[in-house]
Length: 283
Image (cartoon, rainbow, N blue to C red):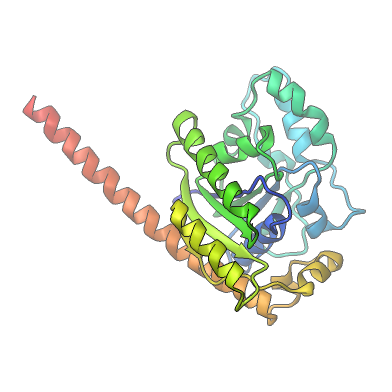
């Protein structure tokens, strides 16, 4: 089974990153996949979206990272810190809170940037979704290193073009230094207002940078904010709503693109292996 670990990443805030991460994870769970959502943002918004503000689990991502700061004979596993009861079948959570921020400097000083990837080894989940903070910091970089795929949410704002350029540079740096197999699935257009020339212009500029634009676009709606208050992903609480339908269609599109990229990579790996064997035989 091909391991799928998807990071929903943009260092620019206010683009609907957490909403997208939670709802894509919920779509995966709805489809019957055993799914894990890891909240890697000290703000803990993904955790609040799933559990509410008053329900803090006994174990969080901060506890996992705290354990990584000490000398351990055995490899630490993030699966010891999972919240199983999310009230959404097939969806489990590694929650976050403000304690994570207090650990940042210690983790950086002890060079623990690889611990998230190491903690996800021997993963039995069919899909894992990572929600890092809207910043290019330790926790975001740890997610990019751990991920197999990246999805980039943007809003139709002029600042999104500059952010996309910076993200492209960050991805290339992560590939060169830590994670050469990180696949870019594309950009998700959030809060889309149909019929506006400005939005279409932003999308065209993003295409020029070289990103694939995923469809359908996610329309703007107050229902999304209402779903935050309801403590239930919109695709679960209001599956017939236009936003839910768009996210579900987007999830299906992402699944198809991911499968095609994995097939292409497997073919490339086999072809490369044959060429290397031929070269060795000739030598």
